[in-house]
Length: 400
Ligand code: NAP
Ligand code: MG
Image 1 (tube, helix red, strand yellow):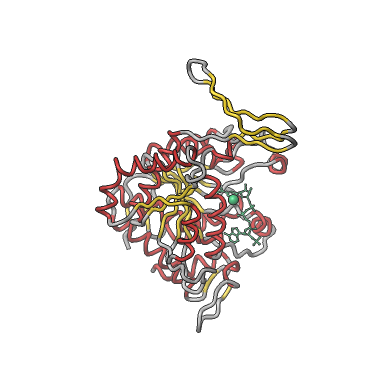
Image 2 (cartoon, helix red, strand yellow):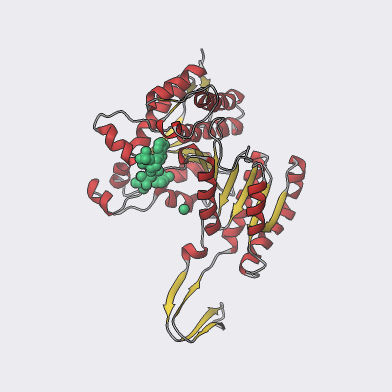
């Protein structure tokens, strides 16, 4: 059989620990036998980041700007213990943070649905995608503890004029907090959400609490509405999908009653909270896709989980592990599919779709990794636990 040819290389960002092991096996067992894989390889493993003073991370992000599509393996974000373990020159920043700052994106997370793993909310039949704004609000806030006294909020404009408002006259101790966001960041968040919804042909719901936070949340609502009317309304109508803005409590109620199939755009804190709720309600972190979409239409695909350190320590002792590779497989299929669409290679798109289907069929047929066994209930199928390599081979059998 002829292998599928690619035109433009994918930016390949290798990573750490157990996911680095899975990365190699996924390529070897599921991709390279079928695709003449063309990638520009960047090793974001912690050793190489340390060796290059983290230049490799910046280079990989710049390559993504150049080529448009990247696939990223999970990486260690070093803490004090990692600095010792890897004898690092310094405590390097999170590679995801560095890459996001360069690509200026929004993170979309969607569950991978499998027949046999029932969401805790049984009416959810289709994925609910959370689009989380990843800048500002309480994540960049200034806060403090007060005693008796007056808290004020001041703003100096370009001319040096000062506008001051009283926050509160404290009769006793209390707390204050000042947060911010920028129009530019909100605009790029809005465009990323509109582009993603169009791409997936899913309706977009955006929620804030602008009835209470009239100016702050009101600004988010206004920017989304203006960009929608000017740039996206026609495209949405053509695609037959809706954009709806409503209050966050209203969306929570609608989401619970829905059957899924929605992109839910959330402010930073709302997205933090709601994505954990949605991920848990669907089953498992290893069954969740994650993609960073920039307003310029650049895509970086990854798994939503970490490097699965606990399994890796077992693996290097020679013990067998049953780590779930599904999210990492879907990072690859997402990236290959997007590359195929952009370069007009229908065989590549259909290969990625077949690989996703084979992965899901394998689980639905009762062969899965250990984390899914307890979650799986399907009449006439008793789930069988495979190790990671056996699971990948079971998927490969369905591809041939
Ligand atoms: P983690 O790697 O997501 O793993 C936490 C636990 O969740 C695992 O011990 C395992 O539970 C379960 N789990 C996660 N993914 C799994 C999979 N694919 N298959 C089976 N079980 C899975 O999180 P962590 O242990 O907190 O972090 C480890 C490292 O990953 C850290 O150095 C952190 O910096 C990094 N990290 C990277 C990213 C990223 O690059 N996107 C994201 C998060 C964390 P059991 O042990 O109970 O089996
Ligand atoms: Mg969280």
